[in-house]
Image 1 (cartoon, one colour):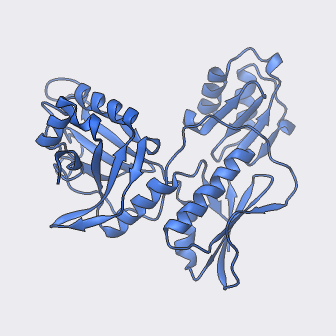
Image 2 (image 1 turned 90 degrees about the vertical axis):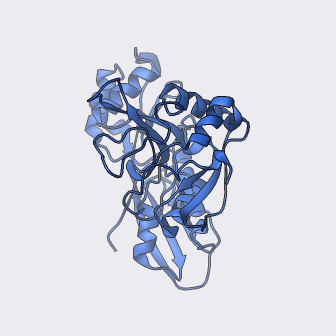
Length: 339
């Protein structure tokens, strides 16, 4: 094992087992092309004649149109106002001021969106808000589900989507319904979060900062295990992400006082210096930084060859983590309809 592969093997133990299959988020700018309003569907995977489990799911979201010429607020101000009104994160709100379109990628109240846009100076009637998502978001949803199912061994799964952006349907030959539902409903955002003391002295509050997100991975390797170590997924960061990660580790103290100082398994309130593998907001594994990896950060070796291991609680969790990293996260949440 090289020093740069040690991440995830030092310091703390594992968290709760990974429940189901999830994926990552995209950070690209929104495509606000609206979807046609007919109920036609677009098939995106190979159909099969075998008997299949069918799962229909509602695509949570809202799309509103407004007149940019009559609006005094800019895109950032509109996004902040909407995120605050729907009690959600800014990443779930997409605004294209040039096109006059706002998209909420979450389950939200249309009246709250109307009120938020009015407060931001965008005069919007309730009739200008529709449920669903934009065409680009719908296409990304289908793409993620298709990749996720393929990674789970369902190469013949079929994913179709209503063109009005409100629903998707998944047909999977030879699968169990509960497992299919779990694959469909998981949002799948994966991140590595640095947890460290926010100040000096006893009683300093713990601070948490996201240091790696799914868009930062250049390569995801096969699940590996053995040698008495927990199963893991070998990954490689992009050059830009490697530089940011190295700078963060240095700034947050992981290369000096924080080396090998993760005690999350013993003290959740005062865990010290830990790197969390987080899936959909839940810590799945916690680890410290080994002295050899800290040295690689300090002397620049990690930036030159940014490989390391993301460790999981067990083999099933490692396989799910790999699927999450490769397929990406769903751009919005899905709600499986009653059988």
